[in-house]
Image (cartoon, rainbow, N blue to C red; front, side, top):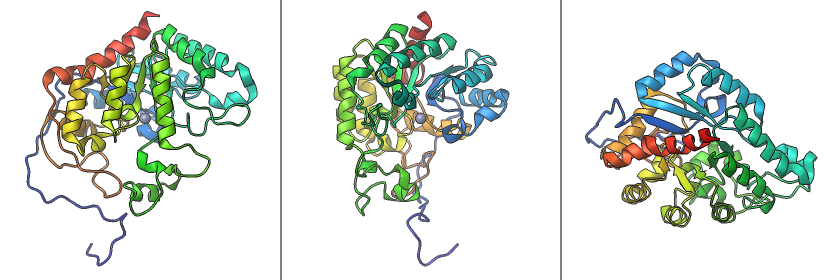
Length: 351
Ligand SMILES: [Zn+2]
């Protein structure tokens, strides 16, 4: 369609660069997708589709094991997922449990012990980790209606229980930094936030990004025997020096790469150095619905030095950036794709 004037939302430029295109049919080694969802909101509704179809997709993509983080806030969803996926293919799926924060208002001071007991029950049912969703640190509140900081000492029993059970805690706090900034012409996620206004967090009553991320660092440092996986490159892909420092200080801290390819690809040299330096504590993860082409794009980013290609979100100014591959060495790929995640998931099976 020829058009004289476009809105920003309509502007989706096709790069005219002529560069090499490497197609990667199979990843370097079998892959663990350590950050996926099988429900409707983020997972493409795989929970309603035949497991065999999902297994075909995973086989065609070279994915050996998929971690479903949708165990959510209670046991009902977890049980359904375990029944559907683990029973069909026990070695191909891991499901993480969750915490029902809404129960804090009724349970008052007994909530942390109760939540720790629920976690134990979830692991007995088959959960292999704990997923903490991003409302924690933003809107989760205690029985007095006050925001619960990420490093709130009242929750220490929960983190201690995760350590005792030998399960990892995959934690997502905050969101891209720009979500917390004023929604003005200089906001680098302007177009995305205009499309999804409820994602904008620069509102009165919500903490600043720096507050939440600082609390995450305190939490991780205070619980050295609990394994924390910081989702989305440690929840701060815009500042890999900050994440690197926390990884250096805290051997119990890991990160996944989920939903941040474009953040990494706009700093490809720094991203490559970061992953190589922390190669024993970086996990492959996508946060996209399982799909052959989606996985192929991830492999192309990690394995080739192709330039300026479209990621899963395409290329839209104010939404996402094109990708530049970082061509990781094979020995690093093996760890990031597979062995780091298998090591963390195996500790849970000991209990
Ligand atoms: Zn996710």
